[in-house]
Length: 117
Image 1 (spheres, one colour):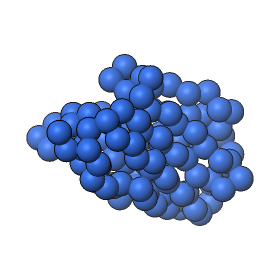
Image 2: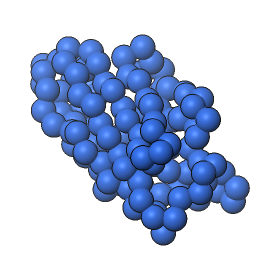
Image 3: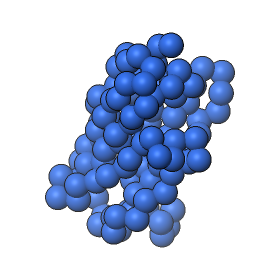
């Protein structure tokens, strides 16, 4: 089993920054992709960013240039640095760990990010 624990959410004014962290523990295989999703009230959960164990990154268009995902493989931790935050970034942010073969997802409990205008 794998457990994911997020931290770093909070309330920030538009234009501000926050850094989310997600620590994974348990029986973790080395080949995986870690990422972040978010869900705003009344909306479906959407993908935000992902990083492979090799360091390859991908971002949703809505956050490209503002958010940076990184990971520390030795600590099994993934980070999301969020800059130039907008009110539309307000959501619960979920950490995800995905094994590719066979495909399987683990999820964190979520952390609230609120951006005030």
